[in-house]
Image (tube, rainbow, N blue to C red):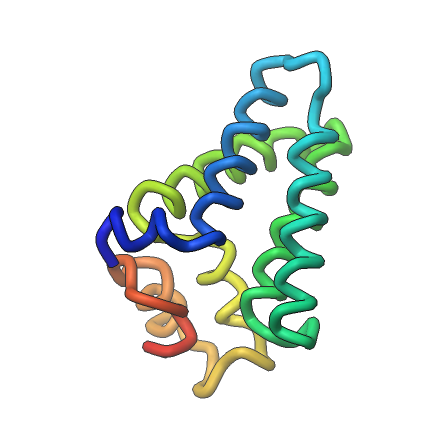
Length: 136
């Protein structure tokens, strides 16, 4: 999917704004992580209302993202936020979502057994149009 098409999608704007807020928090913005967490909650609720189920893959991605962000608030896991910023940047710039790829490996999202080959394929495959689940 090209950049012009992606910028017409609400999800792209959500991720861009979340990434900028996360970067601000990592740069010691006085508001900290609260705005990024708040926007992620809003985004999660929006997709839950749109999809109608927590099992919908777009909702799973947002819940996973929120949980990762909350885990990073615990000081020993603070580095999670840097990983999250890198993943969000990849998602915004080249449509490669590491969180979606990780979640696609969970048993309820897989159509085939988990093997080293399937893990490598999941993470090394170039960005795909739509959901990683559609090409699995």
